[in-house]
Length: 352
Image 1 (tube, rainbow, N blue to C red):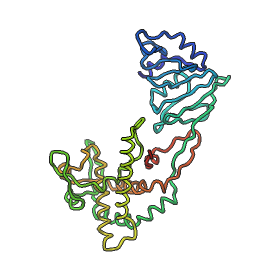
Image 2: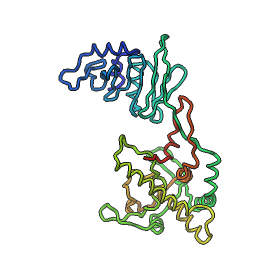
Image 3: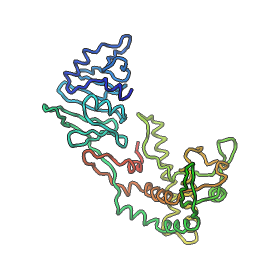
C-alpha cells in the first residue's frame, strides 16, 4: 500500500455518491463478514467501504477514516494513526491537503489549518461552491513555560550550578572525534573513571552472568521521568505499574534534589554537590549509550565515560526543570491550527 495504490481510490464529496459506490461494489467472495473494495479489488485489504447503519464508511485497513452521514456531514478520524497512509487517503478521497506534525494530523481548509489529535474527530460540511466548511473541531491545549517560574526554580539550585562551573573547569578536556570522517571534530568533554563512580555509588549484583553492576537505584531517575502511558486500552496492571513508576521517580528525585538545593550546611554541601555532579555525569553518559544493556555492568565501561560539556549542561538544566514541570509550565488553549509542543508535553506525567 502506498501512493500508487491510493491513487486508485475514488474522490467522493457527498454521501449520495459514497452510497452509490458502496452499492456498486461487489463483495469479495468467501469473506465473512462482508467486505466491499474501495477502488481496485486487489487493494481490498487496505481500502474498503461499508455501511454502519445509515452511515457510509470509507475504511483504511480497519479504521473508518472517513464517514459520510445522510445529512451531508463528513467526519474524519484516524484513531491515533496519524500516518502518511492516513493523510494520503484523506487527501485522495476529499482533496484536502493533509500532513502529520508531532504525532497529529494537520489539514488545510481554505486559508486555515486544523489539527486533529489521537482518537478525536474533525467534522466537515461541503459548500455549494465546492469549498469545505468546518462544523466541529477539537479544542487543543498545550504547555508554555513561565519565565518567572523558570527563574525561580533555577535560583533554588544556583549554588550547585556555580559548583558545576568549577567542576567543568577542572575536568574539561578537548576531545577529537573522527568517526570515519576525513576531517576532525573538536569538542569540550568531561571524562570520568569507572572506579570513581563505584566509590561514589557502590555496586550491586547484575542479572547478567554473575557480574557486578553500578548501583544506580537512587540516581537512574534523573533523566528518566515517566510521562505518557504508551498503551491503547491499558490494563489495570499496566496502569498500576505506571503509577508506581511515577511514585518512585518523585520519591527518588525529591531525595536527590534535596542534596543539590541551596542553603545546605557547609560541612555536607561539598560532598553532596560532588555526588550530584557525578550522578549527572554517570547518567548523562548512560543516556548517550542507551543502546547498551539496561544495567550499568562494570566491564562494559572499563575505560570510563565521556560526555559533551554543552549537551550535558543543557540536559542537567532540563532534568531539574522537568522535575518541577507542574510548577514551571502553564496549560493554555492553543489557537486553531496550532499543534501542541511535544517537548513540554513530555515533561508532564500522565495520571491514570
